[in-house]
Length: 180
Image 1 (tube, one colour):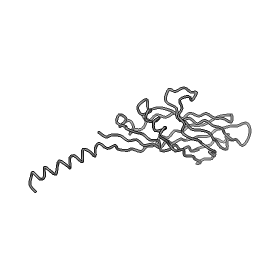
Image 2: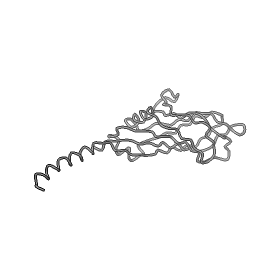
Image 3: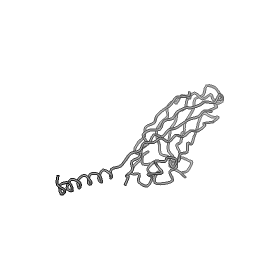
Image 4: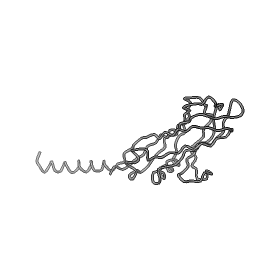
């Protein structure tokens, strides 16, 4: 092959390589949140704060993130105190922006929690949505902090109600970033 032909082949190869670098790369990650839930009434209002700056991938690519997606939020019962008499919890999950009022006026609905049995190992999964993706994009562009809120009602096996168990919420997420 002649030198001029080799140079002509190098141009398309270099062009394809530079175009390939322009496409977004995707990173999957999980953000676990664990809280001891204690209450002495039928209703509950639990706040699970999060800080995405604890994710090294988010720190590394924060300035280049083009989109972020909440695939789902998984609620799991991981331990139960012997004093607990709550048998199940139903209610709603929402997301609260960092610094938002505690009255819930700026909360973004995630979905329903229907009859989560308070038994170790039980879990419920709530799927993400485009509204939640927009929320998390504002978190990425802002403080990287927020909260998951669980508001609901409990059913107990006796009176008075004593809720004393540990819930873990795992946010399964991914983001796309431009590596250039």
